[in-house]
Image (cartoon, rainbow, N blue to C red):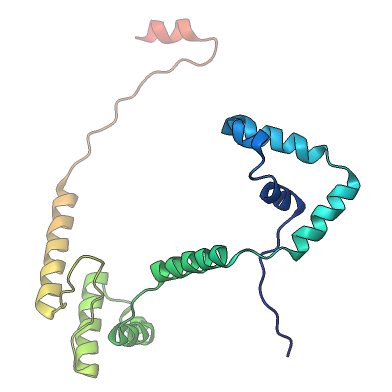
Length: 185
């Protein structure tokens, strides 16, 4: 098997920026003008100088400090995206995939109560709950689930009782018929 070391490959312009970083002409300019001046200097290079820059860029290895910073940045990013897993949650998800079709005809609220009861009977343990950051996890019980369903049902009854007011008709004139619309009023 071939082994290789991953290297950050850079282009000729990046190499040029690294070499010209401490150029006194550039450092004396404000940042807004520095980029323009650097671009002009790069475009003024001869083809021979450009080839030398490309050769240097291919051989260039970032310093140890730069690599360490990059590794730390990647590590922090990976840690931010790692989700804590609970074994029970995986079991419950697998259980839902298998059993969901059997209860598909029931209304949603009743369906999940039945699935919860079935899960507890099958595995002999309550439903696992994954806590959000900064909050404590609370166990979901049959009692709390039924209470949530009652609240949901009572809200839906209140929403059904609301009556919408009828919309008023607004007379709008077609193009070129503004006078006719005014006469009808």
